[in-house]
Image (cartoon, rainbow, N blue to C red; front, side, top):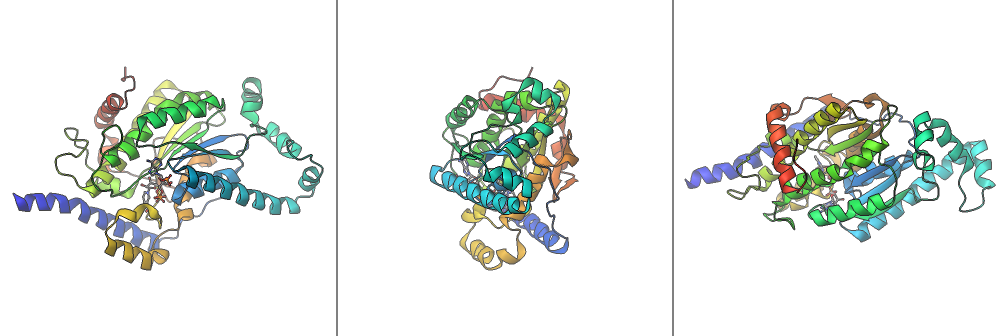
Length: 383
Ligand SMILES: NC(=O)c1ccc[n+]([C@@H]2O[C@H](COP(=O)([O-])OP(=O)(O)OC[C@H]3O[C@@H](n4cnc5c(N)ncnc54)[C@H](OP(=O)(O)O)[C@@H]3O)[C@@H](O)[C@H]2O)c1
């Protein structure tokens, strides 16, 4: 009996280490994915959870560099505001350097009264806007002149109340939403519960994003056009291949394993993405949903790994793991690449569509998880 219990707690650990080593080896042997040139997205809005640091920070930064109005949602106000300040400063610096080489833009900027819109950029936005944008949205669709390009919104994904407040605050801005990146996450935290009593990995990584996405979908539906489908991009992980969904014990209260709980939450995110896409296709709206795998990335996500593991990562991470910026590339690609226009229901790794775990394609499992999640998140059930 004791041997069985030991084996069941060791198995998820061994499986996760095995898959991590496999991915690291692939990263070393294959050329890493570099971000292609992507079109500017002026006037569009992105919402990035966990954008204060790690992969989310670079995702937010690149999207801002591409002209998006970025909302960073996080549970640490000081870190969030610091991330906003850094991104604003870095993107403004880079813009400044670039405009020096573009004579006409420089002229426009030089003659601009501080605080007034940049006419070159406004004309660019008008030129890129679709006829529908102009007919329907006016200023909102073309861009929010006068608003800051990056801002922070408080959102604790471990609290349903906080998520609902955050969405309310976002909606009060009365702006569109073109890209939602479900990026935030925790890994290998000791057994604990969210404010609403869900196991932390399941409640925060999965259920928090499930609720957030469902609450933001109406805005995304309204913002989608035949020219730009709005996009839900959900960050999963290769560990989802090891995940097991036990519907009788989704909160893993019987035999807790932090490795098993993390893998389960990442598996749930892929199932959620596919079923969401299934419903969006059935509705015929201009919204797509994809899931991405960033690879093994050198970030703070490993803070709960045992100290020998952290020591090895500290010694070798710079050599074997992707940088946080490299880890963000697939999320950015999924968010704005024209290659994925109107395409959903994919699992992307290194900018390529790959097959996810077999179970993720099982529509019965997807549907059951969706139904259970609606109950847990107190959302209307599927009809
Ligand atoms: N690093 C990897 O090797 C790897 C591999 C596969 C998948 N991923 C996935 O990539 C995503 C980003 O991870 P990362 O590597 O960038 O890790 P990270 O540096 O630890 O960043 C995690 C982010 O999640 C946010 N977060 C944590 N708890 C939150 C909460 N209760 N509410 C709102 N936000 C919260 C953090 O925000 P605060 O700073 O505000 O706490 C932080 O910005 C995660 O979903 C992770 O599972 C990472």
